Length: 66
Image 1 (cartoon, rainbow, N blue to C red):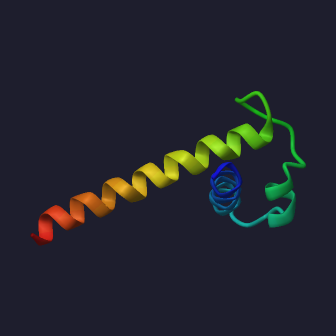
Image 2 (image 1 turned 180 degrees about the vertical axis):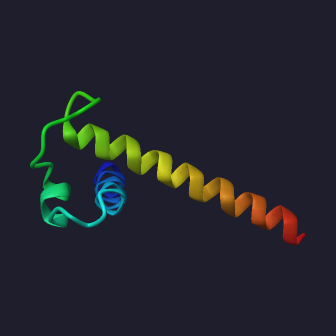
């Protein structure tokens, strides 16, 4: 589960950067950390937040439709 969240976080970060870096560098963590302990940990946190937002959106939509 850690790897999936980390890779999702790397993908989201790559999108936020406007696709200006290489996706492979984002996934492998070839950059220096800016606010976390390591770049991989930052990607992991971003991935978990992304999953939580997606779940919340799904729950809200499900409640609206029913």
